[in-house]
Amino acid sequence: YFVSEENLLSDKIVIKGEDVHHIVKVMRMNEGDKIICNVLDGRAAVCQIQSVSDASVVTTVLTWETNYTQLPINVTIAQGLPKGDKLELVLQKGTELGAHEFLPFQAQRSIVKWDSKKMKKKMERYRKIVKEASEQSHRNNVPSILSVASFTELLTYSSKFNHKIVAFEEEARSPHYRKLSEAINQMKPNESILACVGPEGGFSDEEIQSLKKHGFHTVRLGPRILRTETAPLYLLACISYHFEE
Ligand code: SAM
Image (cartoon, protein in one colour):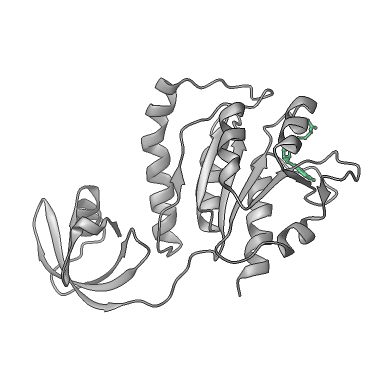
């Protein structure tokens, strides 16, 4: 269960909100049972339940875990808005694979157009998806999901990253092209990576040119064309393979 730092009071962690229902009614846990609490600063503790009420579950920390499950490198997936519920799949599987952050963006060829009203409604569901995927995959933290950005906002945001790559299937070897393995070889632990993936129809030439001007390297994800929702998962799996056991 994920809790914020305010829920940690010396050796006690107090769980509130929806998780209380999950612990008490779904998992049928009670006093004396053990659970793992992840504090949002990245620490995880094995806790024992002390008391249970309708509003809260009070636990005592038994031990702090040393098993950090974060990817040693912070990967932000910038996903061109796909159709239907494909973004949900990217969020869920991307969380399992260790993404640090998700940035959906409105690409020229995105078929769906999202305004802030629609995003607000969806955000609650998305946060639930990444929280549950984080718990299921024993992550120490929950990735953040940024609101849908325009392409210009994406370019501005890109300035804070150590490495910027864009998955582009059509690249004939240009000065901006990097073999994916070479791009990953240049990454070091604790650095930040922004990885961009196009929507179903891919990137427009204009978008690719702008990304290159903003310092993005194009990478290919093998010789086959992957669906838009497969591409970020392929990238994350490659990065995990390189950095983790
Ligand atoms: N432009 C193509 C088309 O319309 O037939 C395919 C677009 S592909 C379905 C969606 C996105 O996935 C692309 O914009 C790219 O970011 C990524 N992608 C898929 N396969 C890829 C590959 N083999 N190499 C690099 N990127 C790939």
